[in-house]
Picture 1 (cartoon, one colour):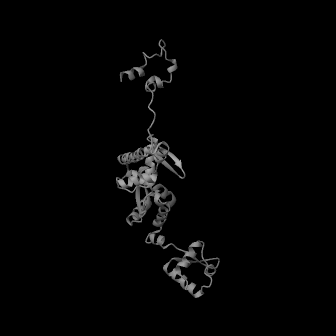
Picture 2: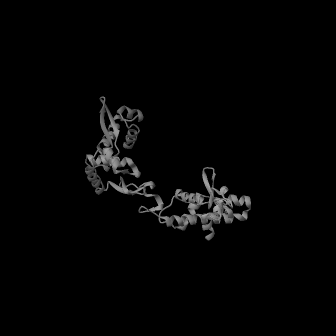
Picture 3: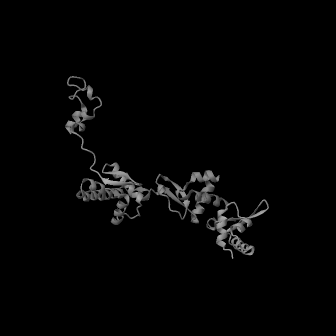
Length: 288
């Protein structure tokens, strides 16, 4: 007895076509009658296609899931569907569909509307260009580059949500650093660093997010804290570690004055044309 699934697996391994000799070589000892029976079952279900190449019979695997997805579509719909399918979950612009399908705009709009009605495809707005839509298969979840990920809701950036996450991530780093102080300067500093996984677990337990946040989302937040100079990060092994920081050293008094930043300060003198008495920037600063 030859298993049907075994025949299909062999056909998948030879996309150019599977011959009877290939089957006999790959399944040594199998009876010809059993092989023929298994092949006939595959042909009846449509999972194998039979064709000739230079007088030689070959069997080619056919993905029934894809075949069923285009069932009932006309030629133009199949062409458009396949272009959208190839784009995956990042979608494809209508301009690109038109260019690749060679359909005029009227025909293409009609085909897209028909496919949407049949729930074969869907249109998704992109955060990168809110006035444009990309098309993808109906059952696919859009890529985060299209939706904006966890930071967007209905194409709008959730700034308040990001601020809350920023504050809570910094709170975790600060509390970890404070609790490590009692361990001494060397061990305390080492223990004050946190992995992104630790911060992710803390945020998840708070349940402040309505959507599921990935570790990468939290790492993005931590990086903004580093850029704000409220935390530092070091590379350790194959990942980054994060630690609360004290921020920039306060500026000295002279730097805060216009004189401390003046590009022509060396030309300023008591009796010259450029002098403190007529400097509008200095007078404005003194008035405030």
